[in-house]
Amino acid sequence: MALGILGVKIGMTRIFNEAGAPVPVTVIQAGPCPVVQQKQPEKEGYLALQIGFGKIRRPIKSIVGHFKKSGLEQAYRFLREFLVDASELQKFPVGSQVKVDIFAAGEKVSVSGVSIGKGFQGVVKRHGFAGGPATHGSMQHRAPGSIGGSNPDRVPKGRRMGGRMGGKRITIHNLEVVRVDMERNLLLLKGAVPGAEEGLLEIKKRHKVSP
Image (cartoon, rainbow, N blue to C red; front, side, top):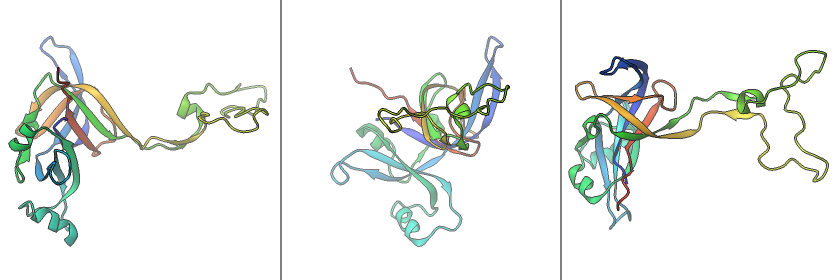
């Protein structure tokens, strides 16, 4: 169970710490995210907060009805659920907002996003194959080579071949929160995060294991 927030990746830059050393950071526009719905064990069978992000200018009627039940006049493009405990459920009632102040500098978080799609790629780029000889008429510069033997007469499962690269959901754990800017709803995380600029990100507090 870990409370979290939604945001978009703005880009990367660097800041300087107290010792004057440069620190690469990713700037994320995070929240504020309204609480649209609370999932209760009696009805849904689990505890969770459903939050929204990214306003919709012209939503369809079926979507508007879901937000009106929560007392929200504005519809949101993205809806995500975060599993929480009972205390967090009481802290964020329906209609309240989840903001970046749930995080603190020095805290470790997990970030999930969709990696940049690179389309169909060969084995050299996708898997790091060395390729064949570049000279003497080898005619096999970037080809994968043999993909199976005659016994058994088939391609083994899991054989590394060309195919679609990127465009997958990736989660990176233990990223450090360098700075929290409440005025501008910005979150600065040390290092890189998945996805392209303006891509949706889920930032979760690190899961605490009870003793």
